[in-house]
Length: 640
Image 1 (tube, rainbow, N blue to C red):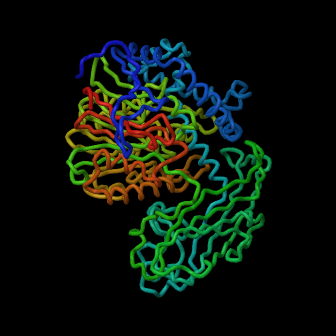
Image 2 (cartoon, rainbow, N blue to C red):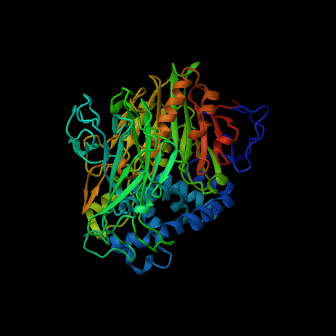
Image 3 (tube, rainbow, N blue to C red):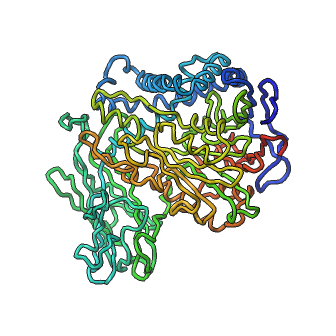
């Protein structure tokens, strides 16, 4: 362990070196800081609070009070229709989001006081040092875990009431071509032109979101038939309550938009024919005739959008219920690959950003054989978080010396490394297998939205302070309860690499909600010596599939707004890794992280490359996107 360095030091590394394409000495972005902390948990928290008092107040006010909490308050109307406790007066008049986040944080606090009191002491130190009320420090340190689980529940309920794609059919003679066109394992069925779902392990007609092609060897003159369904609005968990005002059932034919590769077609184009069906127009059949036909021997991409006729005014502005964009790929005659071999990369929709990404490398993927871990975290910057970015270097009185990339007032980060060379990162991964959904399943309308488990950033802190290897960290993490869905990557100085995909396991599945991935993992690696992760599950599939009251609680791929974004970014990351295989040293990883298709230019929060064997990290933060800045080296053992 490195010797203590005295009282807290606030460092601006304006004279550090540079990793990246520019020349000369690196200039630390004005918003990024390094704070060195020593002593017991309370002392380190006190130093943290004193060093960053104004920035802590600023982050709380700008990100939570004026940005996140007003946004969450917009969800109250939907939430209290299902969970009656939130109809009580104390949650009204703009108080819903703060009370919900505080109560969830207090619930986590009760658990932490029993399991990890040192983190409670550290938060008290931050509060005392900064003069910020402890309640606010608690909310700052627990809101992410609560917010993500809350978002998954509310987003899923909203999607259940929104239009969806029910059927997908290719109008072409595929029943006698000697090919398994729809990937169900059967050749030349009568319904071989109809996309099928394998949800639950049984093939049946119906559209299912896939990470690969839905159809193969489609003739160039095929037309594409889609059937959309708009379910009735729900006023509550029983299904008998009246939907909210303006929540009308019925598809809007004028809303249909189809992107074929890079070309967008709308309902006004002659190639789209629409027919309403059902008593309320709840079904919409669309026949799409690709202008000029389909290209031969190709992978073809479709992005499909539609909405219903609702005019909902709460939350404002007036809006219909909109389906999730569905991203679909298929192949045309002559391509010659089965459905499962054709990844759903698709075309960019021109709007969505890639999510958080991580990549671990070693051995044959690098020029020197040394292990490294790269991370670009993007989630919720809102032009705020990057202005409060901090690298915290801890010298605890017990345990390992370590560093985490975080933010003022928050005692954890989404990535870090210790002096023994253990590096780790975490990305969120949408799932209904989370404690908030579990409470709804158990208590129905009487449920409160309270998070449980150990917040993910504190889990990384535990691993960094107590473990020295991937194996030790894996077993330590296995014993901690998950607050949400999480994708983790761990790397150590000896070249150990491990991926972990976590959920709360509220159904008691045999895997314990803890699925391990190794280098070379199918769908998460380009070769034998790398492993990558995004914000979707590659191995924990299906993550969840059950009923919650009247709801069909679906796996992640059916509803998550991050699913297709993460799937596409992961495939591009794999391609870029393969192109650079054998060349992925620190500079190579920085170059990879700067690949335009992998950079979220709106919500980027920080980026880093860890070198475990040298106990050195190279961080970029304090600007958006983080990767546009210089990667500043920082050593846990002195000058890098």
